[in-house]
Figure 1 (cartoon, one colour):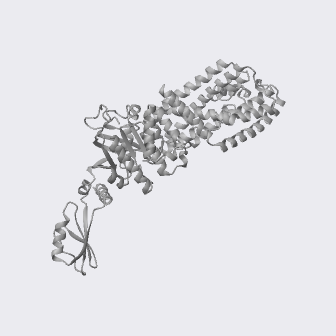
Figure 2: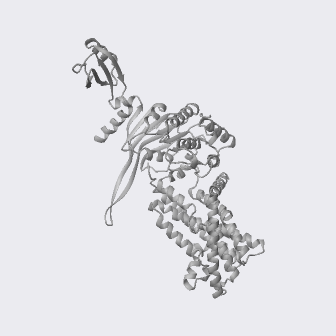
Figure 3: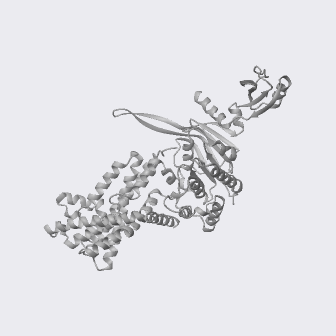
Length: 266
Length: 331
């Protein structure tokens, strides 16, 4: 029980740390809105040429764009979550401070990252999404149950996203400079999560593969739940499965990393 | 202030090291695809005991193995050999259990939340160490008062000066009443006033609460003002363990007698083992062992030479330690 309160406090801290930087949040909201506008007009042109592309109608495609913009920062699809900080702590040796604490490293960062994600859904997601809903034709469900299912899917998406980025961050124990890995993860995240184009647009084997990868849990899965294109329970099982696998692998890598740890610098 | 709790490791020593070793394997590239493995002994057969309530200085040159020792004492690093116990606990095996008993301050790192007000980090410690509410309040109030943190509690840590941040870190390490406090360079980079504040607080902590303190530093004034015992480590081995004063003997240090004569004279013929080391006009410098008495020497000189003035200079502890390091390096 006591540790529940600890990780709640860590999550609250994660939330407030990001809430501190108001100018950055405002800039982010602006960027997401502009980026959304560019994508929305691209999608409108696409769906004009090919109606029902990937099984979405035009309103669903537009909704998908604004969902992506609302979740981009929260799910750290383009980076910008806890991983940069953790890698820096590993590189400088500050990780020593985290390791002697009576707390679990993975749970600690998971809590902090979920706190951050919650702030970014509210601080950076709501405004672009509302903007899109007001100025463009969107397809949103009326039933509260669909929205509740969507929120569960977003929470699971955040866990999968954390699981992937935790592995990326831990690579710093071996690589010292994680820039390359971070950029690869960033590229994979953008493409495979469906940030550029919905994954159901991808044809044939490529489509089958990307839809089975963990990244599809991040944007595609919650979007399909909200748009009524996927069965919520099946989606939850898929997402939770990936989350468990990634978190378990993260634990293994963590114990290997801390066993061989050579904490940098004096 | 319940220092009389039953202690598993209390009888022998609170911190016990017996033949502790830490070997790192360093791989070095020696050519294309060719690699050479080299074993580096950071800590090499280290044995010492620290009793409960002691305040011990732990010094040595850079790379001597000080931080490696501290990391093994917190359980972050596992020793390659030997036996190590803190409060009866094997740190590497029960790191989390031990964490509740120890406080750690790494002078060059911080445990505080960079972006948030100082008080937020303390609230986190409250949860992390499961400190009972009343206890937390009491300890926080005490630290705030003694470390003068009142005005800083609502300031984000990134806006604190180095000295303020260090005081903040020390408070963070003490809220859960640790039995032992490891301090790794707690005064590094601090100005004179901040150093005095930190030292004053540590002295009081040790005197009032009986907290065992292991202090790593390059600042010998820290040791002179705080520690009755000092351990010198170099190349992973203990070179000296004893009172600070004893370092003078270990380093065969010398005092200097400076005499002003009435006029320029040839070097004084002083009784053994004193000898003239420098002459400058009517002033002469004589070196003699720190353990010898100055009185006899002065009397002897005054009887035979026209003495105007004199002074005795105590050996500089830094010079003594530098000498010990240099001797070991050449040995």
